[in-house]
Image 1 (cartoon, helix red, strand yellow):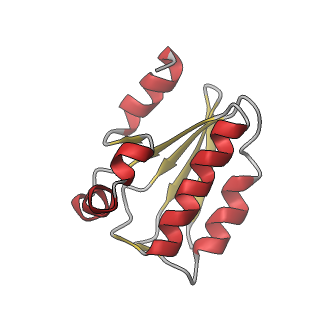
Image 2 (cartoon, rainbow, N blue to C red):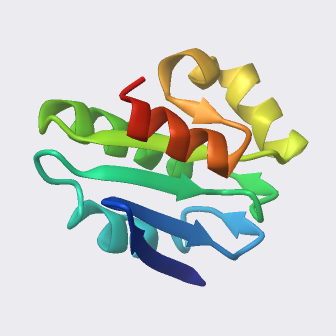
Image 3 (tube, rainbow, N blue to C red):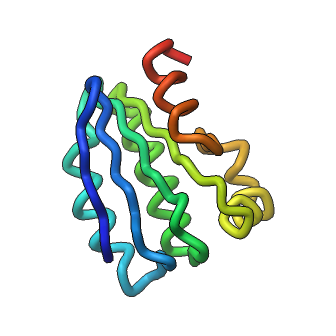
Length: 114
């Protein structure tokens, strides 16, 4: 799985450059992201390039979000991919997670504290 990590303005961004996140690769994503979920962290998971996610990968996203909340961190997901947004809508996760369609908007929300 191709994951780029960058840190800018106190925000850690993980950009997933793979088309699929499923049970065969989600462990790698979890290993990379989970170590940065610490108190006060500001994290964006950029899924704009992802076209498919299975239930295992969705459960890992829920885990990230809950872990961030417990540790006083911010965790936002960015995707403008209609297929992935449809998965979030169908599962109800669109209401449970912080999902934003635009990366710059996610950065703005974090910097403004919303």
